[in-house]
Image 1 (tube, rainbow, N blue to C red):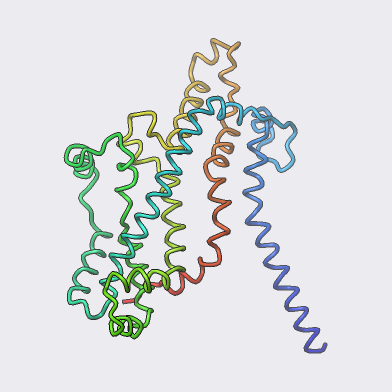
Image 2: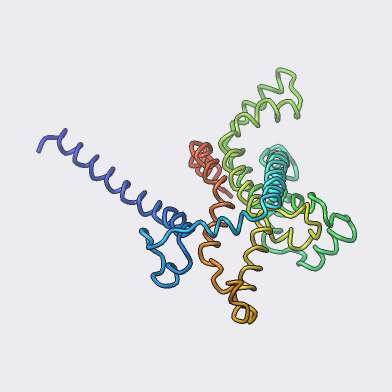
Length: 296
């Protein structure tokens, strides 16, 4: 076999292998969508199937029964995701930049302090007291943004990326008369686009999936994010489905609530926007991870 033929065969095998891998990766998402439009009876009798016996949109009807609350939850989640991601990226970069500079006297002690906070923290009770009694952030959107606005892990990832930037660029800018803030905003941030895009993806996922801090600090319905709203809907459905009242009041058909398909419908409604956004950041993803690797 000629070299050209061997190259084509190797290319065909590689492409075929990764096509199969992509199909296996996509199959759970396809099954998720199919299960969400499958009737509860079919799921109970036959389990999860790619070709269900009976289609039903009952799960979406239940989840979307109060569109006003759902849209409000989307609005809160989008707001805290956008604001939290931007603020977090700015503060992360501003924290990582000084400790990445070898001419900064306290870079090692501060780096150790940041790393130390990964291993130890004050605990949940002091944190709750701080947020509610000292900062008075209960029932505010800030309570959903501030707790995760600075992550030690993200700071160290960003530091690892900034360590790779040539220090000669900074020295040249200083010679031209640029100050530290001008260097940071006009030179460092544009050069850090891959790392910022990668960290921004991680941070936005965290804010989008936020529900635990909302459970702790939010009692006002107008500040409830999407994830907590969906958790409450699922809890109510499961309570009704498993309640003794379901058997007594058969005409209400509580026992036939589509709890299985509702879970899948909620997953699609909650995670769908992130699946749409992810491809736009994909070109930065690998470069940001590899170039921003931690180093000692």
